[in-house]
Length: 509
Image (cartoon, rainbow, N blue to C red):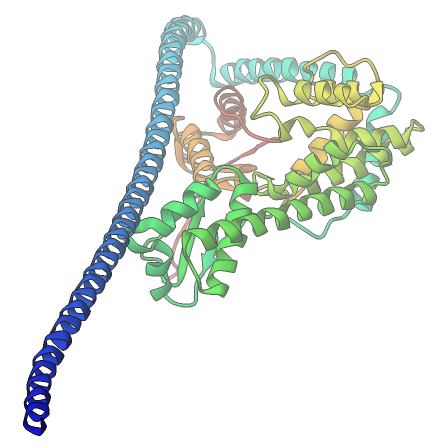
């Protein structure tokens, strides 16, 4: 039995030893299969995640490329619009030049016809003179001189009579002296401390290195600046400076302030440019409002519509021949009120009309017609006083003057514009006027040299004494003055002085 039990135990041990590895192998296979399935599931999840990330990245790249394409298209469209605007401006300039050329051709044709008529008259005059010389050839020298002096005297008497007639029409009941006193008093009481002003268009920069940052990569900064402000930004070889060019002074002032802020800030890119331009616009609008209110306050004009006050403020940035337009309005208001007070008429109405006399210039680029008529229509829109409206409309004789106020405004306007230093004349026009004046004098025979002096208000002519005698000098001065009146346009009057000099030189030995 013992051996039997031992045999059974051995058999059982062998069976258990066989079964245990088999069970362990099956468990390991099941665990391995479960692990493989888990890894496969994880791999699928990771693949799906990467697929989604790739799709998101692809969409982002497509959006970025589309944004860049849209930006480039906008920039190109802006550039094309700017080029089209320049082409349009050039076409308008060419059209104006063509019109000017046509006008000049017509003027030249008219002058040629006039010269032809003058030549015919000159030929006839030569014939008449020849006949007269033939008639007087039998006379003595004294008799010929007497006839010549008589002719000169008759011609001068005619001119004197004509001028006396003109003076009699103007001078009645000592009105000339009274008017002169009033005007002089008004001018003396409105002495101003400014002469000419100009709108700043040159912006200084710390260094020339900043020009590249202003231009930006591929010119994007300068294009953005010009598009937003509507002002041309000129960057050339001028050291440490850039130039702003625009016809609208308000836009140019906005651009100047914005550019100065950008230079101080140092961050120059399209978004920053737009932000600075908005700030500059607000600053300029505040200045316009303040200047308009200050102008109204200075001349004590009450009840003016806010839109008219704002229009006056905009004229603070506008100049006419170098004269600040808003300060010109204030001068006219002062002068008109002073003259009105001397004449015992309503100074308040004159002052109000003087302040608003050229308000049409603020909108003349938007409305067709003379600025005086445009200004009167504008004032009617804002229910201004009828006397003020009529004074504005008639101060340039565009409508019939029916009261004294248009005359007062016309007079005050002329005084303000013509006082010394108020307006500047271009150097080219000034030199051309002097050259024309000298050439008119040089065209007469016997003239040795002509000198235009005192800014063209006087011309002195030196004649050859062997060709022009004393009587001929008097006649030459008269003839030159007549020719200047016919051929030139000038302010005031021009004094013509003929100098005839004989020098006798000898030496004591």
